[in-house]
Amino acid sequence: MKNTLLYTLILVVVVMLVVDVVVMFMSKRPYEVVHYEAVYEYGFTDEGTFTTTTRVVFRKEKYLDRYVETLKKGATDVIDKYFNDLGEKLKRNLKVLSYNYSTKKIDPLTLEINEVLHLKGAVLIKHEGGKSVYEASLGDVKINAVGDSTVEVILPKNAKIISVDPKESERVSKNNGIVLVWKNGSLKTFPKVVYEKVE
Image 1 (spheres, rainbow, N blue to C red):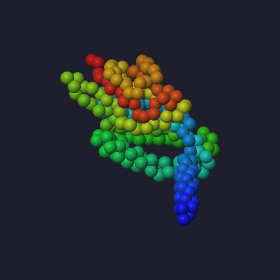
Image 2: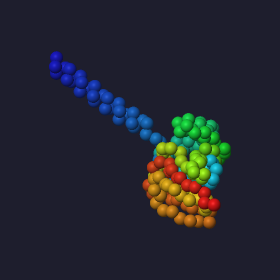
Image 3: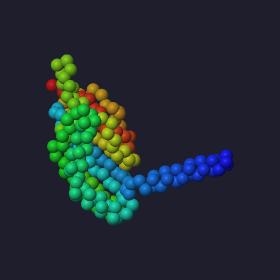
Image 4: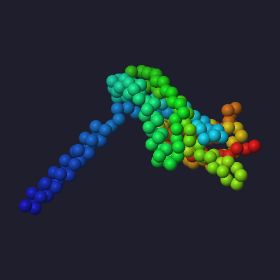
């Protein structure tokens, strides 16, 4: 009786392990992000503009074609719903002002997706001691932190940076403003940048 019970327990454990492996295999995404570039631009309003380029390699060409068809059918609706849900989670009023995308087939298995999103509510404005403090952030939203990735945050020239989390890889001044740069997948979640305006 004891041996029968023991064998039954072993069988149950083995079956559970097999099911877990099968589920993990079946849920594997049919694509992999291999390249990601993003530029997040902020000013002295509550709006932000996000421009991204993503390259995705699919396991089969039919998966790529299906992905493009899915984008055509409902990309804008998905983006709207995503930011509505995120706004509820963050207790902020996030509103998509405009969203445009284009796709380019690099080869039969590689797709490049270019997106431009203009979002209201991307920057929190707080008034402290007679000054306005701007916080550009989207909570703990994950980004495509692949090895071949670059993320830039661009602020106006007359912005004074108070804090950056996580710390940037480098900081440079360009004609279009102050640029914070994260490279090589060092940025895992959306950066939080706090700044103020220098008169």
